[in-house]
Length: 243
Length: 322
Image (cartoon, rainbow over all chains, first blue to last red; front, side, top):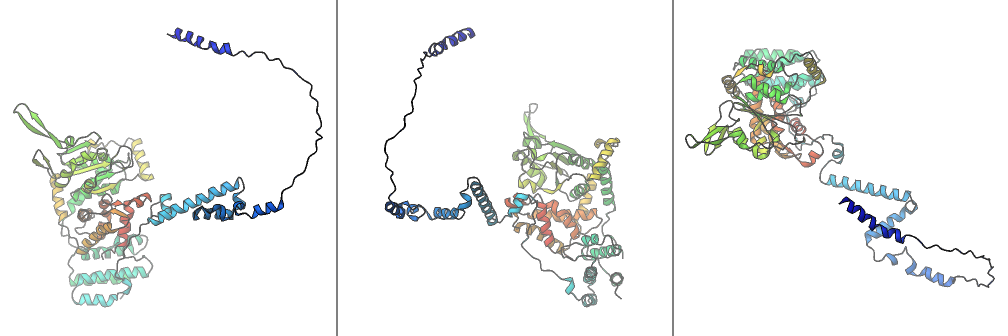
């Protein structure tokens, strides 16, 4: 089979050899002589009047609306716009660069506007950093700086509501720590967070004991007897330096 | 002033310490994972452990299972796993010319489902009934699981190759989703030292159980009766409620999530030696309870926000009951 193909290819290429020989051309070189042209000629000039008419004709004023009358306002705007930068945009290299830059800024601006419109933070989309999430509500909170603790504690103890009195004592100790600059008071912080803030102070140990007492009484609903309350009150007073 | 304990937590706390020490003899670091796993067991919940390959997820789950003297079985979830491979199937017995039910590996006390998200949704749905109702219904017959029944599942992050996203209904059945991070530099160095010095003589198979099923049952009963102040319950409800109204979230937490936070917080309080719940306990378990139950809006996902970011923002905006 291979042999047959080889023979076939040899024969198939034969006509190419047969028709490829060009017939020899006999070149003849004749002597050329240059002859000067001495015929008369008439110089012609433009008709200035006619040219003026053409110049005034709306059909030849390409910048005028006459030519672009069929174009949309959008196209006209862009023609006008690019006309403002004609000096830059008509230059062969910088002109194209300027147009690319302009379109790039335009596209980026559009993406930015779109992301803003759908409520996304355009910066975060590209930086992939976790974003701060806005929580759309506020809690109305008891402000420890506006409570008259001494009066309230007396009132609670007077009606033997020792549980509430211990709570007020604890809040007053938080106020004391906040006023002393040892903690940064925020009502979303837990007692554990305040203890961590006091980690490197001599108040930590004492406050830890008071926190434990408060937690057992307030969160644990452990009963408080009058004697125990006086003991706890003394500890809180000692902590805040009150007599 | 010292308070007289209403509940004797001495045995429970001793058992927790023993579990921690046992796991610590094999696994270095991962303290928060271990604490949450013990909390989950006390709160009677199933747990999903997620982390990249090689951070000791399966090892820790196996160790936890070993620490409990109960029937343990392991199911390796694969893409071709069928529901009957998990639950069991009826087999014809020519001897008495009838079908007999052959129980699957899910019939145990501690079920380790390894790489749970490598099986498709069809197989996942086999776990729905057993995880929530602690029973399996096949051929019209219901089989009730023995107590304790704990599913410990591990998974790779969903972005990894060959994983499926778990159905929301199934995710809601897990009490906690525990995220396992890489160890710190010191921990990693300690791991290498231990391996190098061949101190890994403690093998998983050598771990002796430190808790019986009966003890777990008793501790759970204790924990369930813990005191929770009404204002703490309101705090929990507010956290879950806000996940439903947050504009960063497409799906918020269900009432089951609120219940899970309360139960988890009670167990956390037990581990910390108290028989009442404080806001610190709630905040300690809330991210693990909520992170797999909430879904971020697509734009927040694109921005790279994580569920934990939203949960913490919500918690940080709420007043701590005091």
